[in-house]
Length: 300
Image (cartoon, rainbow, N blue to C red; front, side, top):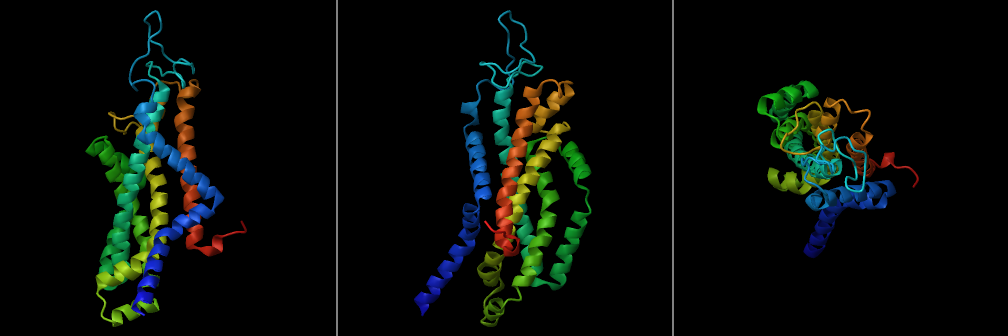
């Protein structure tokens, strides 16, 4: 009997950890999205080896003049900027910034959202009231104005951008996870565990968290997209980290130079990369959502 209990428990742990990943692998569109994300990650890891030129090296013509606004050639695959910088190299290095901000920001958002949501939903009462009032205050903060003011005061850097992203996006996740916990804490197995003398920590870690993991994972996946778009938006309006190269900064430079419409080779690559990455994250998140809510599944 004891061995059977251990086997059942092991299978349950295996299910809640691997279930969402299995859902992605069974969904054709989500699998495509996962492959795209994997390609982006590989490019980000080996960006320095893929880049053909230093990102801020000024290209010169044979006569020694600045090779500015050159369309794509064999030497400059995506052309050059108005300052003679190689667009392809800047574009490739932008993968690293986008994924770094996206994954780190989403990871921190997931931890804080889960902590607030699980504690508030499980304990209820005054604990729930206090934590949800804090969440309500956070929800009252306007997103874009706060991001502009915060980055402007703290200074434009990757770390400060991630801090702003965490402050802005944990609040919605906390409420979503809390709603899931309110349902789970009323389950029979949770009441049996409490009646058997299990501690709050044991119940939360063994029964609550595994059963709301799908909701947490869905919110983290969505937060990656939110974080990437926020960083790109801040960089586009001139609040990005000047010591790094990001897609938003590439678009900002093209806009500031007045060549946003004419130098298509300067604008299209980062714009298209953002669209493809956000779409891939959406496809993966859609599979998680269908896994979490079977009523959304269609005939496949």
